[in-house]
Length: 408
Image (cartoon, rainbow, N blue to C red; front, side):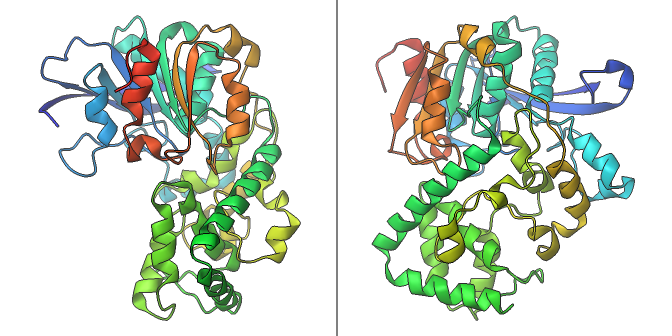
């Protein structure tokens, strides 16, 4: 990576964009990154996956995203910490002193529609007439919300693993995601059939309360099975394989299991706020839990993915303080975010990677949404999983597709 110039911007913006008279504000932070000679290139704002994760940091190290150097050949990159994350008035355990009802109400103002309003304020602050957007996973959801209200501000849209449904319910999404995880589980056991019995024994240990993590969590069977979330990434099977090869009584197993479990405590929003990302005009009411198929209840070796469980608010130390907040949000009737007619009329152009085996954002629903965007070229691929942006040269291909250039 070449030497970079990084400009930092902090804006104080309304918490409640729909009611500026509310008076409450939050800070929204972003870094604008360019490399030598690229100071006048157009802007590309990166919308991170999640919800609840801040933007990556532009370091000269393995922690810097590989795609950043690729993007800087064509753009100045805006790394936005979405509201409630990073340096943008982050949400954390200390907020719970205000009470569950107040915190839950605050979180209702952190969704994609509000992030779009923050983006527009930042674009105006940077004096950009238009800019382009790169949306990864949840960032793609936010891009679709952008196209619902402010499409004229977007020059090009690039979406990776984030063409969400804009018409279907959370129940439909999680039901299909179970199908995806069933297929992913069977693919894994075809490669490593001996691990099916290993998984049965581990579930028995969890059922007996015999699996304990270094932080004191007594791992429940449903929590153990969520290690399957790793199967949604290019090399995640290696994490599952390494874990199931270990002696469950060893320190290494306990620490590796803690690392492999999704929805950690570092970003509480990721757990508490997760199902709201698929709520488009309805309450979720623990959708993933309600939609669990009979075979998942009967066959404990089937892995789960981003299927959160209400019981984790009682068994996971990091989530226990958030129990009342999570219960309130599960019953909250979320407003509609997407406008399919506006998306179809947006005239948006760009490119999107749709991953054929995506266990988080199902291909079938992604292609339904892609049909609304005929000028957004779709790359349907099984070459990468959901984390393709980080795992491989996905962005250069999308940029070339969007600009009609020969594929690199």
